[in-house]
Length: 296
Image 1 (cartoon, one colour):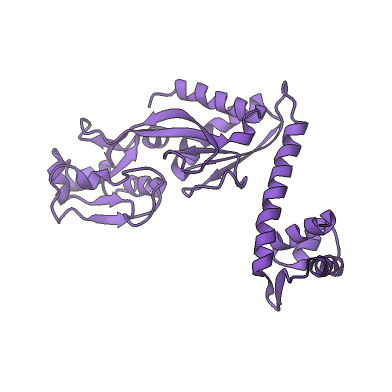
Image 2 (cartoon, rainbow, N blue to C red; image 1 turned 90 degrees about the vertical axis):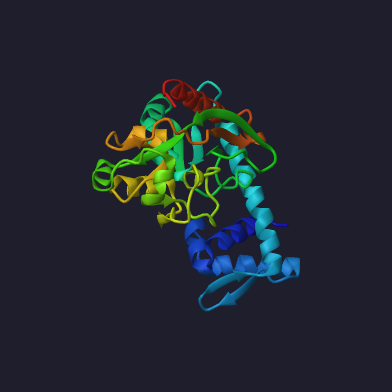
């Protein structure tokens, strides 16, 4: 298979059009189209359905696209590892974390990391969905669940505690619950139970004590950070990770402080093939140091 044609095919499949792929490759639209037609002729199968609105991969095109993505991802990783100095880490590093953790705990510490390693081009992807490390959607993931993908290295990073919080304005209006059963008479904010959450047992507040049918959430939202903002606005009571409150707002009140939520373990995760990456090592060591300086 001609390497240049495969490179053009990969660009077209990613871009969804000859025009956009040509802009990426610095080629004319007609040159890109000729390369794709020549590749289809050599393989004896169509790779794209051509429509006025753009291009759609055929079944054979989807198969080739999956393989090409894997090849180019591995080439990109290999290039970065070959150019990386063991004494002086440099190159791209893509890190994914949950929206709440990435936005509130991790991001404020990035400045210090970049001042130590200015030649690392860091990209932080905050996403409550798990990105595919095997497909190089990210190099490192910080996850609140034990990784499900095979061939991943995981290191325990920290244990996170959850407690119940409300705003002073809400408590002034509705009163402070003294027992868990009194939550039945309060406005509760939870995660939608039918949506996969980034942390296990996220709605433990709904199970405290002997809940009655009256304990129904006033709001369900599929983001722990959004739940925090709703609590901050005075909407109701929610179970929140301590790091989120400590790092964002000293105004929220921990109610029933003797009621502890489940302990959630966070993991530093990366692909086996990146085991010897200096960039991975220095970022891991930096986070371990920052965790040691933080009380969770």
